[in-house]
Image (cartoon, rainbow, N blue to C red; front, side, top):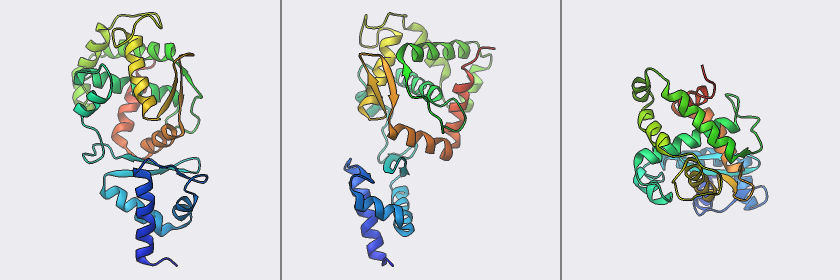
Length: 239
């Protein structure tokens, strides 16, 4: 049976490895993974410490993943930091439009309320079309201002951002000068964060195991975001 200091040391070793960006899985850092997998005490200690640091530990496909809790000020990014991190994104309205694109992507990968059967890949052209459809339905919503207040998300302003972007053919322009280019900017950011694999040649997006694991637990753990995702999903079909 593990003593208190052993449990703490094991949990700290796992947390340190994850924070350093190391893989902790059945195949890498195997000893650390097994300490988590087969010791309830170590698992509980690790989750306790992570929660204190506004972090979450998720397990999927025999691997551990770490990510900040929603609203984390310690490890999460502020709007300003995200604007600096994502090329061409200058205003909060553009950033929130990017959030909408990401939520649309999630609802396309996971067609059901509980994401146990994700779609293997999505074409860039299909994602752009899906975003346009949802914005089109959003604009027709009578009580949009009321919904924006309820969801704490400025749907009115992001509709304006998307409407201002011209349509374009794939590969014609870069930056954020048209709808396709704007979506590509967001996908490249997700790719850099190892959440998706964006094949720029085939114009196809694949979810990573990290993405699947985080989204699964997001649906399970965060009712507010689940509610927001459900609203975005509801915009898929026209009245």
